[in-house]
Amino acid sequence: MTATESRTGRGSGGARRAPGVRGRLSSVARLAMPGATGRARHVTVRNALAARSNYGPLATGLVEPFFYLLSIGVGVGALVGEVVDDGVSYDYTTFVAPAMLAAAAMNGAISESTFNIFAKLRWDRLYDALIATPLTPSDVALGELLFAQLRGTLYSAVFLVTMTALGLVPSWWAVLAVPAATLIGVAFSAAGLSAVTWFRAWEDSEAVIGVQVVLFLFSATFYPLSVYPEPLQWVARLSPLYHGSALCRDLILGRPAWSDVGHVAFLVVMAVVGLRVAAHRFTVLLYDEGGGEAHAPR
Amino acid sequence: MADDEGRPEPVVRATGLGKRYGDFTAVDGIDFEIRPGEAFGFLGPNGAGKSSTMRMVGCVSPRTAGHLEVFGLDPSVDGSTIRARLGVVPQDDTLDIGLNVRENLIVYARFFGIARAEAARRADELLDFIQLGDRARDPVEPLSGGMKRRLTIARALVNRPDLVLLDEPTTGLDPQARHLLWERLYRLKQRGATLVLTTHYMDEAEQLCDRLVIMDGGRIADEGSPRQLIERHCPRDVVELRFTDGDRLAEAATTMAGAGHHIEPLPDRLLVYADDGERVVDQVEAVGVHPTGSLVRRSTLEDVFLRLTGRSLVEA
Ligand SMILES: Nc1ncnc2c1ncn2[C@@H]1O[C@H](COP(=O)(O)OP(=O)(O)OP(=O)(O)O)[C@@H](O)[C@H]1O
Ligand SMILES: [Mg+2]
Image 1 (cartoon, rainbow over the protein chains, first blue to last red):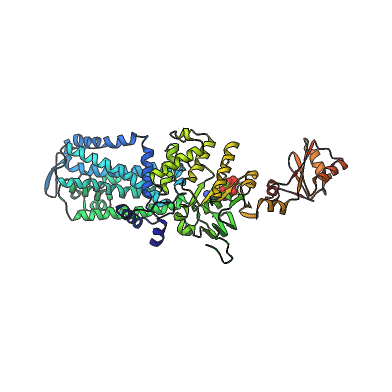
Image 2: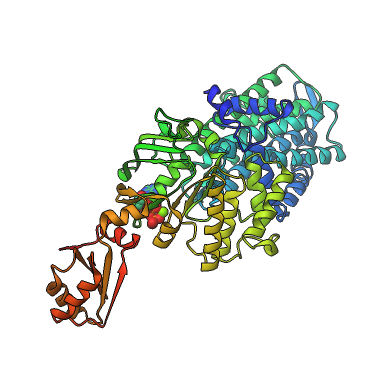
């Protein structure tokens, strides 16, 4: 498979890629994603151009952190006061804010990769045009994911700056929370991109909202995991949002631990598996269905 | 590259090529070869399987039977490499409504890895060619149908393709735009590009195609140059006898049976195929049939098409 892919990576019409960071990045992308040709970034650029005329979503994404932090800071935080985690006592708002960052990254990634992509997959002819070029369905899926993460990373950075301004960031380790939030976004985008290929109608997206709420409630976002009864703790450990919030919390509160490697690993596996499924599903969907997988062009 | 007998390798080679959608067979095991530098046409009634075939050649639709090679490569293995050398005009426009007219060309060029400055240069050159230079910064959506078609065609040429697949390229174009496109395609061919097109305009096929196949029900009914097909299937002349009254037409069809090679009754006229049309006109007078008008003309590809695609013919 790899031999084929490196051949498909260069079309005669295409400029040869300079070896270097870009080349190495696309080899990584090809490993994670069968069928990718290293051209996904052009899809990302296309989306950025098309988004220029539509500032609405960008603006909402940027003011969102205020609402998240305000609601817990002023609302819940005032009621709870202090919380003890790992033997250390934290101001409740300081304790919860990192999980809000993780949850915001998750929510952004899920809605970008489901609601937006559904219309493109089912109604627009856009993808039909893209796959008539050297781009493959895998490139399309990867390009969409990169675009969503470009936005997501910007939002997370703004979120963190807002938190800092509100005095909720005690440690310099917090800088790493931005890539951590991006990893959360990639993992959930990959899952969302896979899920959306099975949607038949708008109504299916309501199921997504349900999943978001359940994850939000059972992921040790509002309380330390130790507060949960033992069986629920195990449920939480299956939730990607739990690993995301725990990671962000450890970084922002300045208490990195070996368990964080586990959290990262969990999210990386989810991202890789999600991307592979998404690539496969985009291939089935964008090339004529019923066409027999064996001959699917790459 | 050449085969044992010194002929150049075909650009496209299909053997037993088939496409099934579920239980439905759209393309039913067809064989054809398209040689470098030629203009090759697919003709056929609606649903014949022309677009399905074009999409398989375009490497966006997996074949379900047979063998297919484009530039000597297998689309199921090297689809991306093949597509890099293709220009595709799909039957339905797939323009990017999120981008303006000029960006549609530039962004598309970038998908082929063409550098930004070069992409911009080609975009402007193509906009000139399709006479949309003054709409460069306009959104795509409000363009007229024909303008969108022209933009789709320009987009297909942005990577200087070696093989251009045109699925009903001139549908919706005004006569002037059509002739401009023919001229451009002709120049492209001069430069060595191979053209594959489908069309419902027989004059277009006669003008543009060196060789063509006539498809019907997923199969190839016949193959050859326009001239060969006409000679093979039709006598030299066609006599058109017009009637305003359907009953009179039916009556005349019976009376005339035996005149010429065969007779094709259409709703408003009878077509009588014959080697010598003038003699048929004399016969018409002699047997006492009085059409409201009559005309003798040479057989065309249109007549071959009617003959081959299962219109009921009254055999002489
Ligand atoms: N994606 C698809 N799924 C199911 N059936 C399809 C699909 N695409 C085409 N078909 C069917 O295959 C047959 C051939 O279609 P195709 O589009 O190849 O015909 P065509 O020769 O291009 O016709 P036209 O002149 O109308 O464009 C038709 O019966 C059509 O309904
Ligand atoms: Mg068609």
